[in-house]
Length: 366
Image (cartoon, rainbow, N blue to C red; front, side, top):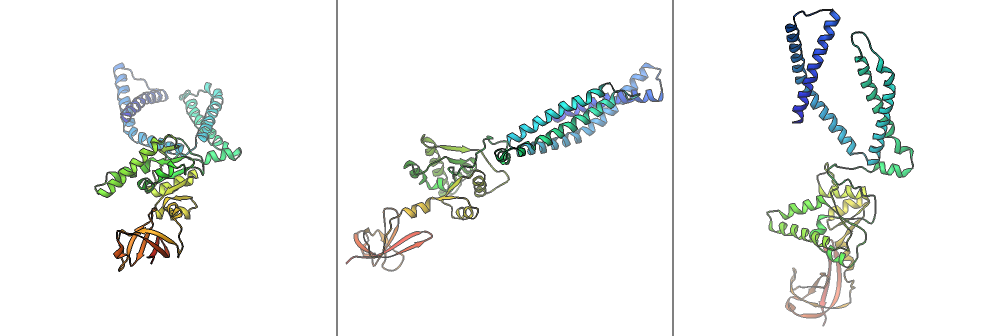
């Protein structure tokens, strides 16, 4: 619709320009058209000719202008509000100077072309002074203390986001998908173990939604549990929670977005993802891993200690029995196959720490 209106208006301008050119040519060659009907016909013909040419060119010009405005919009998106405001102020000052500069030229009139030269010079001067004002003013923050420089360096990633910039703050906690699916963060929150603001990006919620819509039953259940955890966190009025629309459209992977988000804001990442944990460590980003916390909180035992354990199932190796402590630590009972279903006193023989967790080996106390 806008394209069509532009083409019509451009065609009208072409028709007017055609008639003006015709008058200019007739005045230069000193030619007079005697018949008024013929004069009107020539004017109409020239107007239609120029209108057609301009209509044909309008499509290319519209596309070119659209590209220019899109690039300009993208350029402005990447600028902080302060730089945009200062730049606009510079443009306004430049236009005022252009007005003062063109004032003496307003009476300029040359034979044949009349004041057309004034119009052309005015356009050039206004464009030049406006651009000059922007270029000079855009460097304004650099002349001030580092506070201005920091504001200049904070960029807004997308016009669709809420435009709310988050300053670097190590008290921010960025929650990833694995933590929400795990669900233990609810218990950690309830005991006031977490301080500062919790941040859940919308792209994490979108990933949870995709998992919840999965045709795989297990994945679907995990995704729904994660969404339920988000709902429970939002219900707790004592929690400082922010769900932000800040996004990185150029980055496809959710983990990469989380890392970029943490770098930009100084936030710590809450995750159970082993690979994300390792990459964050390499990039110098602080990670809060719930699995590491759980392992650190597990009961410390030493060889020779006595503990009571209930043998609940058979172990993988011959004659072994298996039980669990209250914190979920696996206890392997040597020669415990025949003791399944019984509570027995045992002596710790060894403790094995693996990537999957801690395992305690015991034997029945005689």
